[in-house]
Length: 326
Image 1 (tube, rainbow, N blue to C red):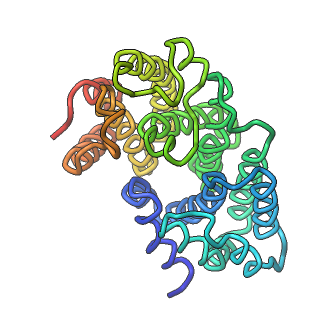
Image 2 (cartoon, helix red, strand yellow):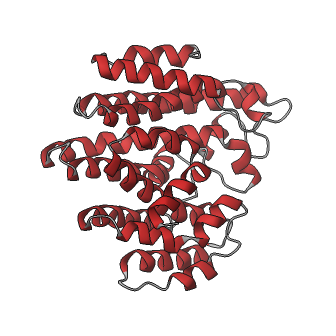
């Protein structure tokens, strides 16, 4: 199996959402983004681990060498990454780092530059001092920038490379693209609370928990559900402006090819639907809350209709925030 085919094979296992939405893009940029996401997922696998900070820093350094050196020691990196994750599919991706880098090196030189430049920023950011010591929303934003805002930069710069955006438009849209990434990551942080606490990751701002008399140990526990839902509501109010800026980003993209808007709109509207699903006490008692598959397809149909007819997406987003599409 050649390297590009491997990227398409592994994508559904490392991101079901992106596996559904990336093919909406024009063919070449779709492959570029699938490769970029695979690179970022390897970096994220290091960040998600429970390794000591110095061990993470060493692995991030090896990953940067894999990305930037002409003849990287990929086998050395893969060997160092053994057992870093207990996720079977992430482990497979890491074991196949050579294929990911092969797919990356097969892309045009400027595409490689865009992906590598941003991936290095992500890798360095994830080992900054205190990056996981999230006490405030500002600190959460900093974390989310490295986790997903960077991906927004990659997407927008790729759109510029293929001529869908001018250089000036790319510069104008980068802040909104960053906020689009933050919106998606903040929703993930909200919905994954049980898994993250179990694995020793704490991305909800500690100061907000303390404001409601809670700690991570008491969050969602018997007798604290009302206060826990208030914390969830506070995080929801924080993410709403990022939804609005995401829609602004989408509306500033060109009408053609339609796939640019369809890809971006599907991602953010599914995130909005996910937020609707988790906005109750079940979040603290039922892991893996997600929107139904039938709603995923319904959102895609409505997004495609809106984009192809020139309708704005605001009303659709507002409706999805309240009621599931079927």
